[in-house]
Length: 81
Image (cartoon, rainbow, N blue to C red; front, top):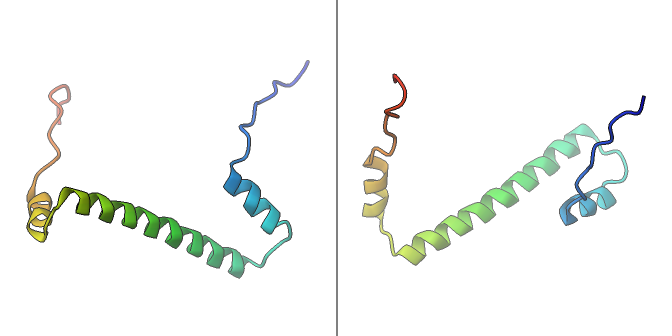
């Protein structure tokens, strides 16, 4: 009986780059530091995009307060919550 073959999606360009750079074992301490660097990079990128969006809308600190005070969640009428 043959084992079903799973189709693996191709690696992304980032995955290929990281595999090439880190083809050798690195200490756990370095791995944790690298994860932190990557997390900070993507967090900063997301914040920059959010800032650009905010600026494109011309929003102010007052708008931030309004958003914070707005109740955005509503009960689903189809549930008993």
